Length: 497
Image 1 (spheres, rainbow, N blue to C red):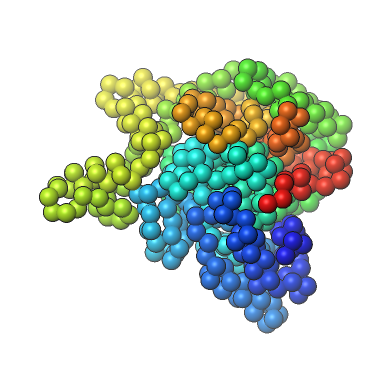
Image 2: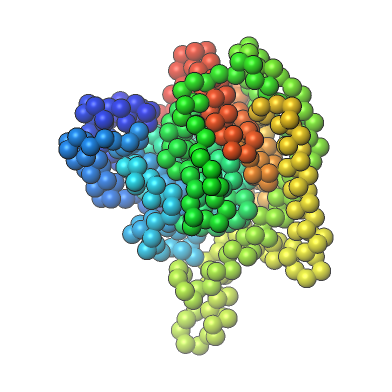
C-alpha cells in the first residue's frame, strides 16, 4: 500500500494501463490510507467507497476488453464538496445543505467520470468557500499533515490535506481569492487557478460568480497539467465559459524551461507582514530562475495595494445575492416549519440555524454594500479598482511573460490563532487576490521550507489570460531544479501519519 500511495498520478495511470496494477488495487490502497489517517486529518466529509470501487472495476473491465484508456484512467481523486455529484452528498461545508443529495453532476464531475478518474469522496472546506483555513467548516477543521495543529489553508483545505497525507494523488479545488493556491502553498503541494472561464462553473455552488474558478490540485506539476486538461474546455451550460481551445498545458509541463523568458517581480508583493523565511525562499527561487536562463524584471503595480479592500466588497456583495436562494423552502435545511410560523419566519429561522458566523458576516457586509445609497460608494468603487488592477496586469505583461511572487505572506498558522481576527485571516490572501480580480491564470508550487518553522513555502507563478501553459512551462522547470537540488520532491518531507 505504501508504494502505491506514493506514486504520482502519471505513474499510477501508466501502471494501470500496462496491467502492472489494477484500478481496484489502487483505489483500495487509497481507501485504506483514508481509513488509517483521516480520523486525525479530517480531510473528507464523505467517502464514497462503493462508488469509487465501482468506477475502478469499470476501468479494469475496459482494459481487459482492450479499450484505450485515458491519461488518468483509474487514478483516484478527492473532490471538493462544492461540486454537485449525483447521488452523493454535497454540503459546501454548511449545515444549510446537510444531507442534500444532488440529482445531477456538475460539468467538472461529468468530465472526471468521462475520463475514468475514480472519485474517492468529497473533501472538507470553509463553509461556502468563505475562509482561508478550513476552520469555518460546519463539520470541524481539517489539520495540516505537516503539523496537525496547523491549518491546511482554505477554503480548499480538505483537498490539499488529502494530497499531502497521500490519501489521493489528485484533487479538485475552487479559487475565489486564492482557495486553491493558498492551501497548496501551506501543504507543499501544487495548485492551479486556471484563467477565469476556462473550467466550467456549472454545478459548482456559487459564492462570488465573477471570481469563482475550479482548478486542479496535485503533488507534481505534470499531474496538475494532466488533470487541468481533463476538466477544462468550453461548456454551453456556463455563460462565462470561454469558447477557445484548452492551452497545451501537458506539453508545457513535459517540456519545462524558462530559457529566454522575462519573469516579473512585483514590488508590492513583499514588505510588512511577510515572514522572513517566506521572503528568503522566494528570493532563492528568483535567483534560481535567473540561473535557469530567465531575465528578471522589476515591476511596479500600485493598484495591487487596493486589491484586498476591493475584493472584500465585491465578493461579499456577490455572495449576498447568490446565497439568497437558500431560503429553507425549496431544498436543504428547513427550520421552524411547524405550522405556527410564516414563510418569512421559516426562512429567517433556517438561515439563522444553517449559516455559520463567517457566512453571516459576509452576507451582511455585501447586503450593506449593495443597498440604496451605498452601491456607488462601495461596490461601484470596488469595481473601478478592479479595472485598475487589470490594467496594471496588462501593462506588466507587456514587459514580462510571467510574474512570480510568494503565494502567501506566511507559512501555515495554528488552528484557532486567527479565528477571532477576521482581518488577520483575510491577509492570508494578500498575494493571490489580484489574480482573481483580473481573471488571469496562476499556480502555486512548493519552493522549500521556511527555516523558522520547517513548514512549506509556496512560489506563485502568474500568467496572462488563456496563457495557462506558461504556468506549467515555468513550474516544471522550477520543480525539476528543486528536485535535482534536494534529491526528491518536497512532499516526501511531510511527517508520517
